[in-house]
Image 1 (tube, rainbow, N blue to C red):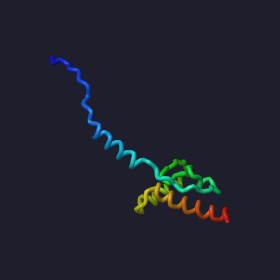
Image 2 (tube, one colour):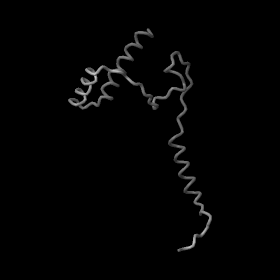
Image 3 (cartoon, rainbow, N blue to C red):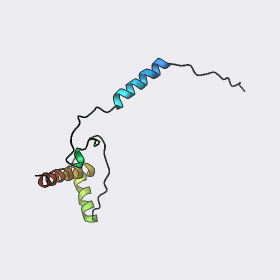
Image 4 (spheres, rainbow, N blue to C red):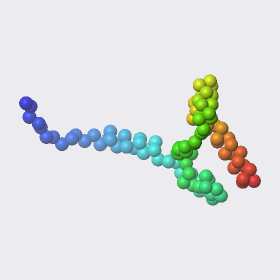
Length: 98
């Protein structure tokens, strides 16, 4: 058996510092201009890059129809639903905020 040797790790602070600096540059969110939020989706804390999950209950026939659409078009079920729902949400918000 070989004997275990204990040595302190060698410090490569410049490599570590460069790595951490690069990570900070890529992950630090850019400052948004201050704005008065008339609606919840306009609040300063709301971010476009955050995706939230919302479950949708569909009857079996509609789920099968959705699967059929996904199988016969380039869009996935998720992509198809997202496009349709976002369009209708924007349409309804336009009506409600006139």
